[in-house]
Amino acid sequence: MRRTVLIALIAGMIVAGCNQGAQPRPQSEQARPHPPSYQQVETEHPKISASPTITTVGFLEPVDPKEAGDVVEDVGKYLSYVAFFSYRVKPNGSLIPLKDEHPLQVTKKQGAVPMLVITNFAGGNFQPDIAHRIFTDRSAQRRLIQSVIRVMKEKGYRALNVDFEHIREEDRDLYNRFLKTFLPRMKREGFVVSTALAPKSSDRQGGAWHGAHDYAVHGKLADFVILMTYEWGWTGGPPMAVAPIPQVRDVLNYAVRKIPRKKIVMGAPLYGYDWTLPYRKEGPPAKRLSPKEAAGLAKMKGARVLYSNRDQAPYYYYRDDQGKEHVVWYENEESMQAKFNLVKEYGLRGISYWVLGEEFPQNWRLLQENFHVRRP
Image (tube, helix red, strand yellow):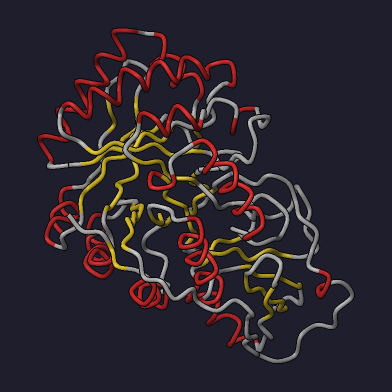
């Protein structure tokens, strides 16, 4: 969801693409010795004490229905919505379904609202041609409306998220007109409607990732929007924090000028990346790993965990069995607390997680300590 997030399955992992340019390493990283020991560095960013009631969204990829059900069984009680990613839209407006029956049952049992996510995803990437066809072909658009309503009613989805990405910049007005037809129609059926937005920080940001996403129009039409504020550090880009706080803050500063604060759900990652050094653009992609895996790897390798007070994210270096150096940027309690503090500071509707199934048990405890979760 970034650039808008680009999410593509490559070698069994998702590649998302909202990297907005490489950031220099923190000053403390320049000319450092290879860290010899494991150490957790304390941060200077304590918890803001207020405990507001917020909306939480967790995106779920039910590739294996049994595993997806187990994930929801574990964390569904902390979520307002479980967002099923995704029903893929065909050029003619029909939908490619998910094997979602079992995780849907678990979601309802856990008291969370199931959210259907529709995308223009095909062939390992978001496809601008599919979006353009839906925007311009009336019969395809009518079929999409009918298909979405039918699936949601048959399966018991009560909320919808429109995640169209990598849209041609010149299709911005077409996308807006589509939403002006599509979202009110879904609302009339009684569904909660939301959209996913690329992490823009100004009106001037254009191109395939940002240009077609009109914050003001989405904020007016949707019940809420999900900002994809992550993937600055991504599998195909240079090493850096996945969701550095200065960049996230820039997006929020822009978003609150265009969208009511109580309609903004801020995205947060439940993962990090492991890069082989030195980074080369055409080199091996970074490996995605969960916060639990990252912390375990640091301990196993005897790596000293550092913390960037600029990005408010942990990172460390280690050498693999072949002697190659690596750097890992990930999330921990301190970095997630910094994100929770932003939700409170800006008075946002809530927080959205990409993606469920990445182990980070401390997050859910911390969520309970900071917020009351809005439940249906």
